[in-house]
Length: 203
Image (cartoon, rainbow, N blue to C red; front, side, top):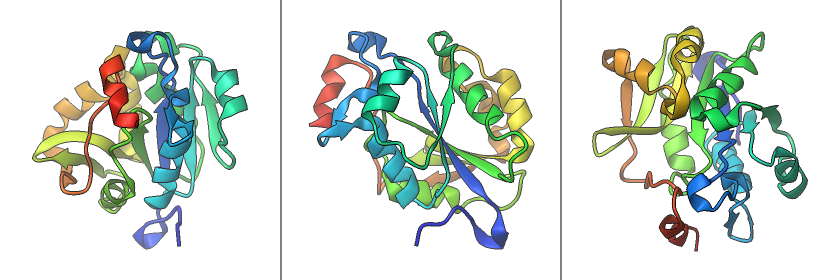
């Protein structure tokens, strides 16, 4: 059964960053790219739920009204990022802000344009939660990737350093010694859908 909790009753909420406009894809929003007959954002939400995150906040930006109309995001908290054109950092800040005042103990951050990362990787990273100081990341043959889990104690620091397209990269570099690297290279492929050539991964 899929639940929103981990051992000890801690709530881990998924943050799906899906605001990108697909500049190198001819201006096609990544959330709406077709995947198995449906918008890619639906697949990403399903992966997070199957990986154990019952609560999913989806950050929208490019053509957000069209995404809302075309994608079935029932049960998700939809977060609008009016500053999406300034980069992924703004989406990460918007997503974390949507958790303020909630009962969430950690945020598991995932990207909409990585369909090669499935429920097993999500579950492994989610299960790395220990307390609100937890900081964990999927690893692909030793290289850090997504998803990334931030205990609530890290949210303010992440938001303060998330700028441009770097997202949490600066924060993670600064806290590299504290990161639990969860190897997922045997169950997932961390490619991005960034260019026309990458669209082959969606077929």
